Image 1 (cartoon, rainbow, N blue to C red):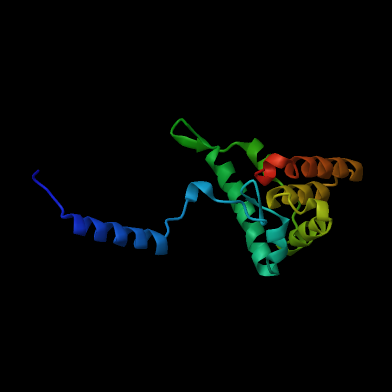
Image 2 (cartoon, rainbow, N blue to C red):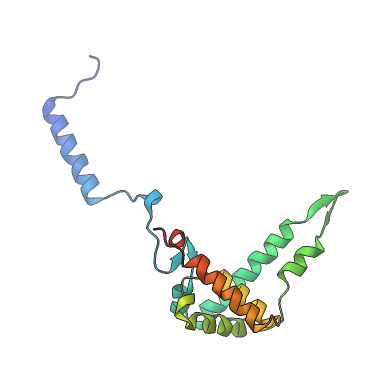
Length: 158
């Protein structure tokens, strides 16, 4: 054989490798367990409650920026120019409130304990619907549907 390692060296190598893997475990990223601050990988009311006011405002700004980016990506090349899709702007339109007002609405939404597992994006959508003047009974139905969906066993990783 062109390559040979003495048996004694194999034992030492095995011992060193065993110690390395024992003291420095490799994380199993494909088997991450969901946290209580997430529902199906999305941040939920538990995370929201742990954020201070400034972080909540930045979180909401991020949602708005993401919606705007998504809307910008719906532009399609048209005769060498970008054409804006006006329907997208209508979909993301919301009443002009300050982010602190939106944060208060979402905080109020999460005061109901059965809403805690609903992802923040959906609490935001609920707050927008409320600010747009959706009837209370329709809001109640929407909240019930959100609870049914996000409190289901599939959403908790079970």
